[in-house]
Amino acid sequence: MVDIAGIKMKNPVMVASGTFGYGEEYSELIDLNKLGAIVTKSITLNPHPGNPPPRICETPAGMLNSIGLQNDGLKIFIEKQLPFLSKFDVPVIVNVAGETIDEYVEISRALSREPKVRGIELNISCPNVKKGGMTFGIDPKAIKELIEEVRAATKLPLIAKLSPNVTDITVIAKAAVSAGADALSLINTVLGMAIDIKTKKPKLATVTGGLSGPAIKPIAIRMVWQVAQVVKVPLIGIGGIMTAEDAYEFLLAGASAVQIGTANFVDVYTPLKIIEGLKALAAGKQK
Picture (spheres, rainbow, N blue to C red):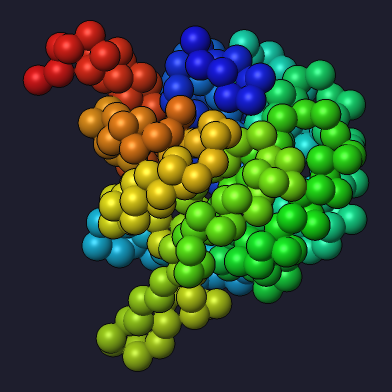
């Protein structure tokens, strides 16, 4: 049993926001009840179309994305997606995004009335939206104001998802915790770019996007370790986790749990394989 700020989980393996949708498609292939927790795709107050295509491209040891938080909005999530997730015995953590503090507050207040929602992950670090997102995530003062306002609006556990695109991750982490964050997720994607040498144009319509996958794992582990030295709240490690050994590195660096992201696109069974692999590692049965 793992406890992340009061969120009780069967194991430390979660699925990361934006890589698992709302679980419906994956439920046809794997048993969602075996997961530690599901972190939903980002929810905004109103429906959001996202960025124009192309908005995904593969890179060496990873991928770039510029989805832009496409989703159907809070109302549809509560009416359609949340009832589906309520069928399963797994904690649901809702990733919340907004362009303004008021939007974050309104969404968080509404989610607080939903019994199935066990926690909120504040997306303050998305590198591919023009408003909100990383605007909050790189400014300690903005983070503090945002989290304080959301903290006053909900009693649900608050998890702040941190951006790696900063000079000193520990400054951001301390600001988030001092404002009332109960836990931290790190890291979100790293700002990157790719160019098609045949067309001589960027591969993404937005030019830049978020880099994820194994390429960023050393960065993520380093940041988890740094933050573990300066805050006492639970940390959730994210970034390039493909195997149980990868996940174990994050736990050794100071994380209490991990989120599986890009690996879900490679092999839908990855989270379950990592759960079993961590059991073997804990029992000293690793190969």
